[in-house]
Image (cartoon, helix red, strand yellow):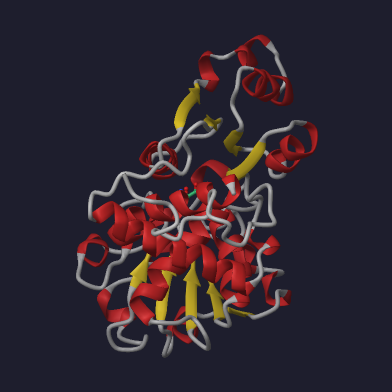
Length: 318
Ligand code: ASP
């Protein structure tokens, strides 16, 4: 069993406590707090690789409430919580009393009353985690709310980029595609700006409009300009489930104009890595070869999701 003090873990060690009760979005975090979270994730990743047992969450009950589909986020939160000795309970939304008309807040209050102390919530309504944080005694981790925010995705992306680039200071990160419907893009824009990077956005005009106002963000009408000299490139999934009215005539036209392939990537810095939060629409946002190729960090993003979520759960528990 790993000794928490030796492992510099935040629970019961007297280490500086974390001032946040919830993780609703990354805009609540200072640069120092982001660095602390990423450092802890790297440390936990190493401990896990060495097969160390950890008990930071012993006595805690973590509820997983996913009202929208998820693979990576749900699985990695479950593995993260159990790797730290926590108990995990999953709310099966489609088989829960929400189908009898019970409200989200009453449903989660029920989980709280049965002993859950931390809820990991994904919901189609932007703002749902904020409502739960205000109206229950639960610690709340936002696992993606509508088009608004996905803080743990942005943090694991930052960890993956930091591993690859060393530092995010003064780096140029191009984010390509369906910005308008993407909670991943919004959280990344906040976080990358906090970390001193410049974000270049490009995609169909109706999906980038308005984002040129964001601090630290440049919006480009042209894919080539956005890619030019970029230190890393992140493609976003076209959010077909959120396309009331659509932003592009069809996926084929999207790929022809905005899809990433080896040829287009020659515009970026040589060897610039490629990211995608997943799942991909296969062959749409980037070619299958690129997704599986040596520049792709997509697998690293998924793997880092576990350590990063271990870090977040540990910090909130402290
Ligand atoms: N998995 C990410 C999310 O839940 C990205 C996506 O679905 O496109 O937002």
